Image 1 (cartoon, helix red, strand yellow):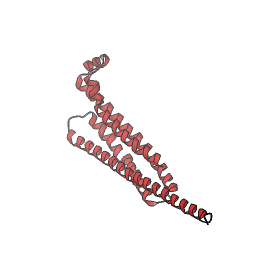
Image 2 (cartoon, helix red, strand yellow):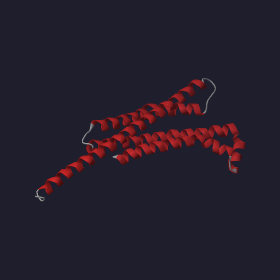
Image 3 (cartoon, one colour):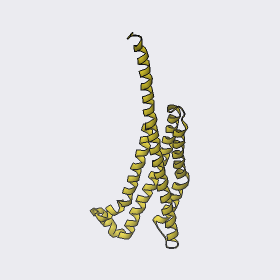
Image 4 (spheres, one colour):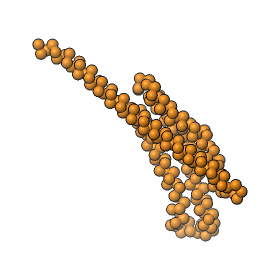
Length: 190
């Protein structure tokens, strides 16, 4: 159960790093291109090549989010089942897991599809009302980042709760063991 939670939180942080790296990918290619890329840049033009590379990075990021959200739904359901059976049906841990899963489902059904649609529109802007479309895309990214941050905070609270719960179980188990030991040794000493 703590392994699943650790995997969920760790992969979320890893995905954030991948997304940040994707933002800089087009700049890395354009700043120090190899010879075949230099020829492509001359053919397409620097602005068009930059636009194409940014589109590719944005599309890759959107696809990664979609796949990661599917994996998170599976992880969340598996963790919920484990928490149900491993924590004697304690509601606090189940509620936290449910909130995390709800945030992922909100992302999966509301934010990511809209981001995919609006994002593709903004990858190749066509004059007109570019600023309002860009504002929508940036707002969707902010919602995505906020839900990811909230999910990580709730996951941290859940991890802390599970560690405290586990520690208190060990202590109570040791106390019961000590009581049994005292009872066994009391009749021998007489």
